[in-house]
Image 1 (cartoon, rainbow, N blue to C red):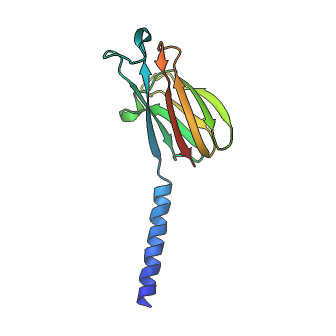
Image 2: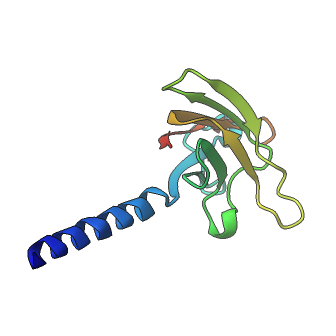
Image 3: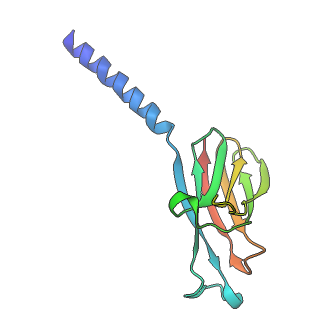
Length: 137
């Protein structure tokens, strides 16, 4: 009987831990490479721009923002194109302007499934687009 109780406790604890892990958000990093003067390799004075996709904070929702502390570091006013590869849904959004101490971000309702995003910027000059794919639950 004691072994059954230990086994039941172990299973219950494992189930609770798995539920806690499943609800945690995941950060998927990606970068955008500037191409100053049309140079697709970038240059020392135009470093890569690091962005992240945050999934798991809300069901079916992705937040695109900067990869630095407090969400800074992504392009301001960047265009975001996305497609849910599982459902075929697609759309576009724009990152915010980063004014008033609020970092640039876009919250996108993609629905659940495998999602691909593409970030470009018309205001930052030529860039190599940032691309990321991830699972949205």
